[in-house]
Image (cartoon, rainbow, N blue to C red; front, top):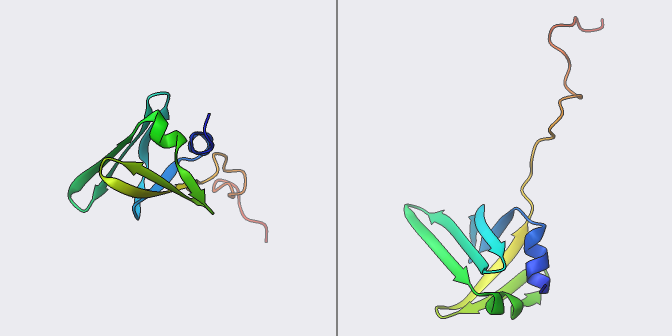
Length: 96
């Protein structure tokens, strides 16, 4: 597995060409990314060979396809914790 393919497995958001994308698929068939740019749906598709040839510079990856060069950053979205243990129970009176 290429370094970019490994990074894609552990992220849940991408920044591609300056656009945030939550809708992407990275598997044996390559990388497919979709996101809205205003009212326009943008799509990128990269073959497994293009993903394997990606060049890392710091946190950014450079991928090339028939349309040219693209910049990709793997990110983790912030999520609220699943448990609500830290929140007070509203049915119990507060300590005074």
